Image 1 (cartoon, rainbow, N blue to C red):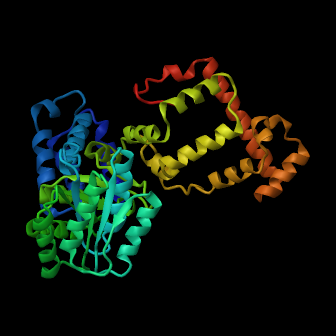
Image 2 (cartoon, rainbow, N blue to C red):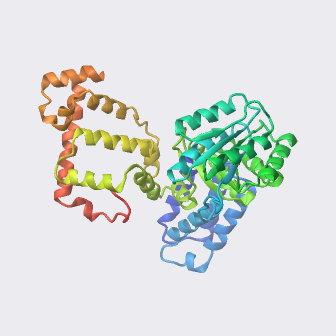
Image 3 (cartoon, rainbow, N blue to C red):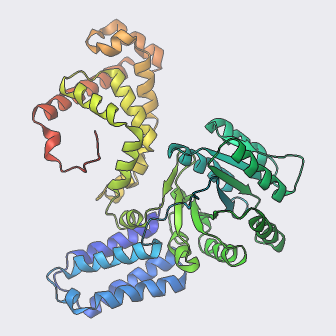
Length: 443
């Protein structure tokens, strides 16, 4: 996410951050580098111009230029302006007090609308909502089947009428179905086109008038860069949108679309699709994204993911086991699964502050968890609870059962024993207590 832009801005920030004295000439040179970095990232030129001007006006103030830490203050200004560019406050979905809330997804073909319908349903279900998806993409082959498959995987109801192309009728009947099933959110998956045309826009306008959705969400493929801005502008002018979701943001190394659409449309980015799994949908926090771009990390998002994977009761039980040195291989496997649920190691690594470029770009063997899973599940329940009984013959059997070598089993067991010792030392020395962790964070 934003790799190219992030590398350039981090290098610029690193150069200026420690400067004890900054002249107007230094500032102009830095702004020129920022301008080039943004343009190369495919950010809209008008947005770049306003962004650089805003930094210059604030940075040239006497309080900044004559302060004891001018470099750090300028870095703060750059971050604050990035936050403004992306949307200065978190925008939540518009829920009606008289359910169901109707959310209409619009966008070009291939932007990821149908997948987002599934991801959004999954997200809302975790928030305690009961969604229903309505299949109004009646032109694309297999679109209805795709939505029904997503619904089956999520155990979420899908309404469709395969034998008609009257999208207004389908949508109205879908909303009635939601009311009868006491669903509090209706997600309408509309048709798209390869490019914007009058027929598409007329159909969306007609649908909007007929069902009066509480939110029209535009799905934008962030990989299309500057074209995404043109698409957002067209949909906003012709249909009228309330919010934007950036799809494929995990694959967007430049970031031009995300840094432009908010300013051009004046509509908030509410979600970011960050992977292929149905759980890979995040609320779009502009301050966190800005910090990631500048290499300042995003610990709050890691905490959010941890809280989603761990209940408070589970966290307390784990802590008690660690204190009593009762952390077994079953517990180890359970923790590995929870970490995997939080996202890929590479994604989590990107959220940590101060991670060097070499480590961020390093190849991480995500399959190691699968090999560990194979090793542990090849043991008997007794062996998992009492790993000290693992003699040579047992280890040979486990190696054969898991498709590994005996050396692999020995190496893993050595690592597990070292981890047990480290946990015991941390608990005995109350090592966890010396970290100033947020109140709502649980190990």
